[in-house]
Structure formats: C-alpha cells, structure tokens
Length: 55
Image (cartoon, rainbow, N blue to C red; front, top):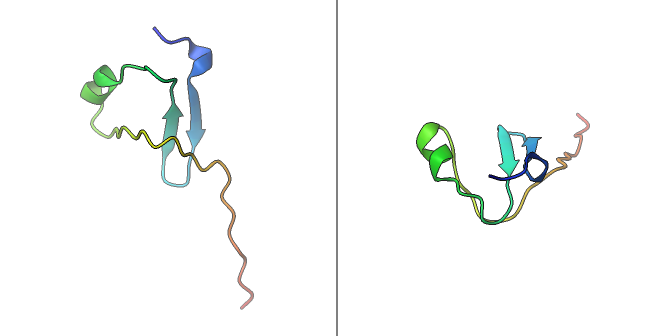
C-alpha cells in the first residue's frame, strides 16, 4: 500500500494526471478503469503559458 502523501494529482490542459512513486503497482487501476493511460516518461508540464496575439 502506498502512503497517500506520496500520490500527487494535478489538473492538466487535457484532463488529470496522477503521479505515483517508483514501484507503484498499476495493474489493478488499469483493469478497473476504461480511460486510463500509463506513461513512464517522468515529464509533467505544471505551468502552461501562451502568447497573447494583438489583432
């Protein structure tokens, strides 16, 4: 069981992301939910900026 303090959740531009520690067993979550992706790239964009265009 992973301690709740080690699990982080973020709202992203497209949906949500949950960051879990190394060694987290994701098999049950992947079986239980239809719309889940497992990504192991270690990158998370936490700030999204855009340039304002002057029309």
